[in-house]
Image (cartoon, rainbow, N blue to C red; front, side):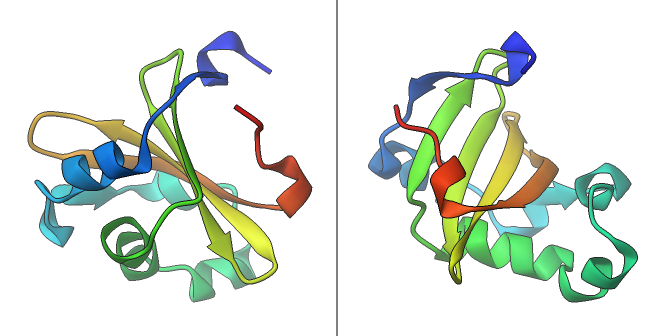
Length: 109
């Protein structure tokens, strides 16, 4: 793994929720890159509204700040884990990408 993608430190979930409360769904920006890891069939299921719902309405399991200053946010997704990578700016949050992972891949911080 590239050092920049590793989690440098854990972020308290309360601190992350407080930060997210400053933003609305219009401040969350998804791009083509956000969905590039998905197979074509999965792209029909995962739309930006689903990602925004997780970020604005769901309680994360774990939040970490990566060495590259992006946030790695982990949510329960059925029996799996949804990992969302965020680039948080002063007035916008860019959803860099996301992954669906097995529960055993959740980092231990």
